[in-house]
Length: 314
Length: 294
Image (cartoon, rainbow over all chains, first blue to last red; front, side):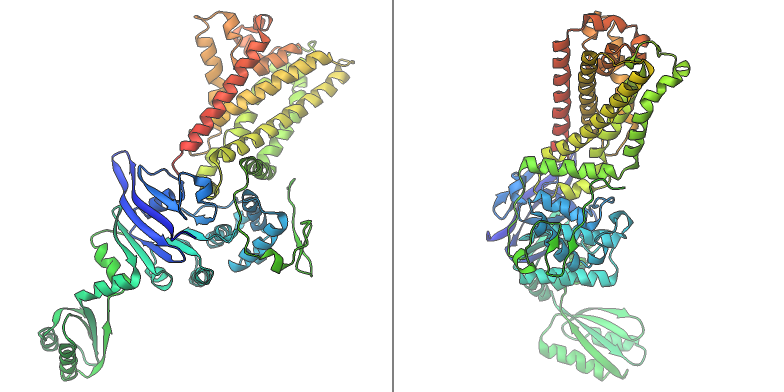
């Protein structure tokens, strides 16, 4: 496997005067999972379409396992894709649909049949293998195209919002399935709105805003770097909060701001030493409102996402 | 309704019946690397898949029924008016000239836009396939269906002709007529295919309108500037000549007053123009599919 499963370099896509993707660069290291995050219209799907050859970039290059996507057939040989929620043929059953896909990869009937059973069991559609796809729910169709992407046991998997349209149980099942791919040393690029999906599955993240990559890299390192700006202390008391209590806490050294959440919780932005943190907790304890808990929270992906997409409407 | 369906039955030893291959699960689950099939094989796959889809489309069965009805039009000659009841097999096939546009537009003019509209193209083209295979496979499937339907109409007309006119039609003329009709189907199918690749939504009406009106109207509107020997070579006349050779009087000939054109027809040049037109339309269609930004 090449060092990087996917390399995107200075990718630009323009439609007339409108620039959908502007100079995006990132790499998906081999065997790693990367999340592509961004609000609606940020350019995620356009980026994925350019990576999979569904559209031609205005400039920039995309290589998959070292092969330029301009050589579409070779570059996608070991890639499984689900882009823009495609529809499987509604007249077909999952069995027939995957037979069509298998033929395009030159699979023998037997290999096709067994791989079909494997992937349909993985996406929990085996019992529906001989039913027409046209009668399936959106979630079932989604599983069906996921089965198509996994049919050839590809080394690189590219998925565009794979859990959209699924119920909570379906989402968990798909995440579990994708997490299992890690054990097989597969590389995954997943575009999603679901921060939970990225934080649970991906070691790498690229955030896109207005067609530009505003951040890209290792999730842990990015969060560590983000935490330099401080932590949050969530103070919960049994008695209703008073102005005096909040003023005393917000006046403590290291507290940079606060946010009152209802009658019993106040969230403090804190960027100080551990001794100053102990003073804040002590102040809360002695505030006379019967302290219930103080929770420390570092920066998570959600905070980072909200920071970076501030002012961009979903 | 399924003409091509085939199911696999799992048997107790873990292998699959009807597959012709007796691997166990362990053997089949080896870490195989699959590579894209050859362009020819992918074209065949797309063609077979399209045929399978068509076999489940009621439109195809309606077309076959209409093919049966083409010769029946002979009995409606008083209503249609353009049929000369004494002109043999040609009079039975008169409706072919009209139906060729509808059939080819239906079979070859909506597959590519349907792929875009139904988003199945996002699935097919995100695999290591050649867009040429994708488009050609669909065209070949449509062409196969159209040729099949018109051959069926010819067989029925031949049988009816033997019954009604009490004798076999002139075999040489029937073969010539079939050659014109095959070329006509190719010309009209490739035209429908080429025009349809411009659209992202399936629109059966547009190719029909274009084929009904575009070619004859272009021909007739320049009639004032060109002489008949050139107009006679327009590839839109193939179905009309196919009927005229058998003694029928195609409606378009009567309408445009161009019936005598067949006498001045340079056949090899005519077929050459038909082939060039078809290749041009296929090339245009492939170009549009290649540059399509999904």
